[in-house]
Amino acid sequence: MKRNNAKPEYKWDFSHLYKNHAEWEKDVDAVVEIFKKIADLKGNLHKEEIFIKYCLLNKEAEEKLEKIAVYTRMSDIDTTNLEYQKLFSIYTNKINDVLTSLSFTQSELKEVGKDKIMSFIKNNKEISHLEYPYRSFFKRTKHVLSEKAELLISKLSRTLSANDSLYDTLAYADNKKVMIEIDGKEEELTITLYKKIMENSDPIKDQELRKKAASLFSKQYTSHKHTFAEIYKNIIVSALEDQKLRGYNDIVNYFLESDEVSNDILESLIDAGQKNSDLFVKFNEIVKKHFKFKKFYSTDRSLKLTQNIKGFLGKKFEIEDAKKIIKEALKPLGNEYLSYLDIAWQKNRIDYFEDTNKRSGAYSTGGGTVDPIILMNWDYTIQSVNTLAHEVGHSVHTMYADKYNKGPLANYPIILAEVASTVNEHLMFDYLIKKVETKEEKIYLIQNRIEDIMATFFRQIHFAKFEYQAFKKIENKEHIDSDILGNLFKDIANDFGYSVFDDDKKKPTYGWPRISHFFHSPFYVYKYATCIVASFKLYEDVQNNKPETLIEFLKQGGRKEPLEILKSIGIDYTDKKVYEPLLNELKTLIKDLEKLLGA
Image (cartoon, rainbow, N blue to C red; front, side, top):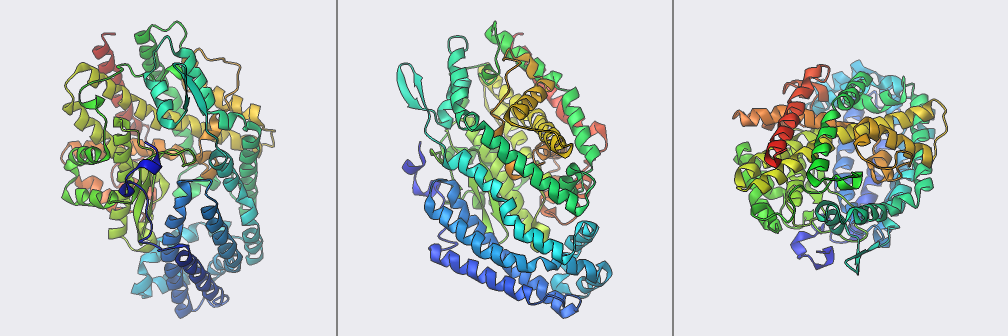
């Protein structure tokens, strides 16, 4: 179903935030005025009463900005909508102009010093919750520059961040309908049709169709490969310049420091993924053998081992059916958790259905003064049900964090963000594998489970190694272009088991720009892998009738160092044994799949 045909309750409606754009703009103006008041405090943050005022003004601005930001997410529904492009332009013009006047704050707070600031916080209950954020701030003050330098960087920030919006314009707003011929009929190659071709087409007869579909689906990226490469290079160069100005040891440390993750942990993760990629190879060899392929291409890897599946999994999953299934699966987490689900998917908070210029994929965002919202691209399959379970995991995590923490302590970092949502995936699998009755359905579920774990672990580590090496190339003053990046992505894929496919080994891969995190959030993707590792520990606790471990994790939000939060639930990434539960689960699943297939 296309979005414009969906029921109103299955579309975003943010009128509870602002009745119209004019109201929204009033709040933008209000934030500008708050920022001006903060700017007037310059030179006086060493005074206790002024520092308290500064903190309270920041809180007031942040609460308004939460609403403002969620409202502008409507642009993801139609990235060609000039009305929302105008709103974004209004926002950036007004906010950025005044933000430069606030560039003094970090350098002035650094000058006031940790001891005095922490005493202000300790002496005042109204701001006592800021102890951890300021403790973290003072750990990083060696990278805070002089007031003059911070002002200059602030003035340049709008230009430096332009690459992000260029990526979105090229990837989404300029996206054109792509048609493909199937059985003599021209059809639009939507996400839903693409998945159908890649998963359920005839294994042998439609090998070329799958290649063609993959080529057309990536056309938006391959046809602009030089532009995407240039945008990416500019993002790397901008980050490197900031890293050098701020005195970070290297570019990786620059991105990892906010999560207090060492380079060693990232390198250990990459090593663990690469060393165990034989599991990826073994699984794909099972697929190859099952379909009796003479030539086995990467475009064949998503084929379902049981097609035209009947029974419970073969049904068309309506949204309301999915909600009931998810509630049943997540019952072990308790009634409080289930009550948050009802808030997460109340009407108009989830935009379910796809459209030509709608942003792809799925996400959950919001929090603070605004209930979380979710974007999806529903296709009525069990995969969509699982995606919804994953995204509401984020939303519920956010609601727990908001309820049990004050202000910025509710803002959990990305390295924690994918843990709870992935636990939901584990519980969904447990529920479904017990629900189905036929061998075919079990094969289907186990295949999906293997693919999901591999996509979250091996594939994200593959992505992490790609950006790690791309950044290192620029750091070492090496030249990069579309072919160099394409070959780098392909070569690393082969390091992670893609050599099992009979693809052209000499041809660069130009579809890598589809990974928007490379452009918007460098060194984000590795966190998917660390999070699924952590999620297996919490999953084991739930299985052992200890859901309170997960609930306590959700309640902690971002109230202390992320690795300390993880250690409190038994996760230590410096111990190589941390990967064993995930790897053992994969080995068991692959064995189960072989037995079911009679391999």
